[in-house]
Image 1: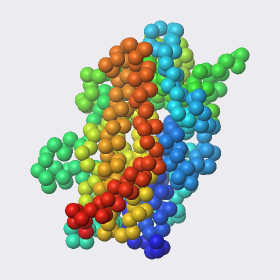
Image 2: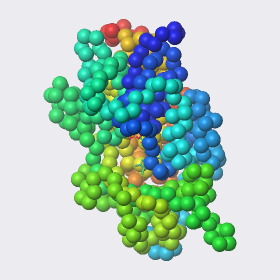
Image 3: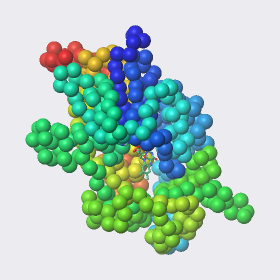
Image 4: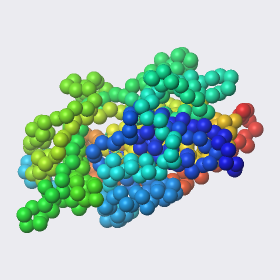
Length: 436
Ligand SMILES: Cc1cc2nc3c(=O)[nH]c(=O)nc-3n(C[C@H](O)[C@H](O)[C@H](O)COP(=O)(O)OP(=O)(O)OC[C@H]3O[C@@H](n4cnc5c(N)ncnc54)[C@H](O)[C@@H]3O)c2cc1C
């Protein structure tokens, strides 16, 4: 392939999904990549993130394995998994299930995780302080015009909306389609909806979790899921073992799809509030809550599963496409796989003329899978809070929870990449389709 830049891709948003895509696309010489980020710098929360072997395989294929290894203390250990405990019945809880992850899982501080992508970016492709306000698809040239809130404009052959759960790109895509196709139901996909769940998030220094005699809190050595009715708490070590990431959830199932009553999206919170909320919980969970640094509280939102990922030369990826409940730890990893597949398809697309084929293949391979994982993740949230059809039948619930993660091993990223390229190839050779 020539080294001439024949395809101009604009990525709106420099979070995990946008930066992963930028790194993957930059490996193809014919693609000109620009990242348009509204903030003045890249930023991630002071919180944790977990990835599984499937995502690790993508890092290997992108040549990022060594850098990600250097950013975590965790190893691919098949004995690693979640310990599930019943924790809301007083001071003493009990373990009731162990869900191993094939080849283990790796945990990260989010900022260290994002830094690996930032370090992998070529120079001069990021434009900070650029908030996309709207886009326009030129019907004659098929070019996309991007408009930013500061009054400036840019053009591209393909716009990828990686702008997160409140995506401006998704908002315009579905508002436009609702009007153009006279389908008001598309407006249902514009805004995120509250799940009825609040998440209290914070980090605990590992030094606070080692007793005078050297006894170690369980979470220093294994991820733990503490479960109770309408509440659960997840904790695992990050930052090379120096911190434990804690997220404690409280759900009011009757409030799903309503408007949050006490705060909008995120707020600082008092440790007392967290302790009060979990006051009847087992003591080892309370130790975590008692030592959380600067806790914040989040109203957890999600979007309805989308019917499209693509409209013309505009495509959605990451939370813009599938913002889901965080319960399987699958939002960012699904975004990374979206980026990997889209980059493979665009890598095989040498000019805008055949872009539609790549986008049709991306939608075919990723949309159903993203919606499937979103459904599994939401269901997992109900299971962890004893609100699924299994209720409190822990013997049945344990294996059912393990099955929620089975999508990780159903296929491999290599298989999915091949499936995507095959699909594109079939379209290319289909005499029935009049691709331009
Ligand atoms: C409590 C919790 C725990 C989680 N744990 C895990 C986990 O363990 N594993 C996992 O895989 N996932 C996890 N997730 C999900 C994961 O955090 C998200 O899926 C992921 O961060 C989404 O990345 P993104 O790049 O798509 O969106 P974002 O991170 O939201 O990035 C969007 C970017 O776009 C920019 N932007 C927004 N609008 C515009 C605009 N108009 N113009 C230009 N730029 C714009 C923003 O500034 C931002 O940089 C968790 C989520 C929560 C809430």
